[in-house]
Length: 291
Image: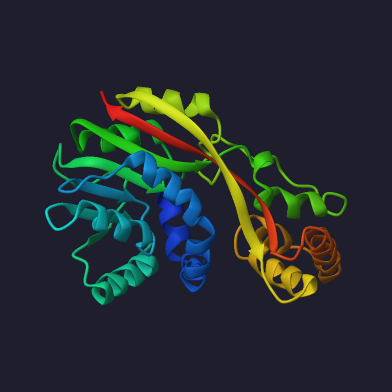
């Protein structure tokens, strides 16, 4: 009789993903990523409105930039905890916390199975950290349990890919060279919460009430430099740091890769001006209350 193969634990693929080459790449370019996503985080932070003395959880905290802001907002009478599945990024977060002298707790754990006592937190917060759950409704139901009565959640998630040129423009530039699969917005990934109806369904199923979505858009800077050409070169590096291009081109021949790189660079060069090379970025700022 064959021994049954046990099911993989929840989010096993994402845990492996963020502790492998991707996690190390994000660690290497973390400062760059924090800078480019700071404006989106500030929009979600304003909606979250953390108060002195509150206990807050930063979901998918990465290297800790948003957790530190939360810690400053809640002050010495409050408590800020960051949770993430990426050991490399959490290592950086702990180093930064020590250097800043902030009493912040960082926990390597899966936020879809939060290891906290019920009703611990006043606020759950996330900047692009909630779109990677295998089972979003179940994950948010577990997170809901950690909120105090009347507690709230606030997070930033990307809107439709077509509204985010940092993702779409490089792909459009090589559409005549390579065919790409459509984005499945119901699978874990950056656009898993791009559909507002899906967000409302997931949060309602998890027990949240007063779900509100506010659109927010601001430029996402890809390239900077002393000349348009330097901006395009800088932007090319960024395109291969974030987004799907690196994965899409990896199995292709050197000839196809060279052709694609040329097409992407030409497309980016068209956007460069005196201020830099910027592309569009659009998010939802989502807020809700514990039901």
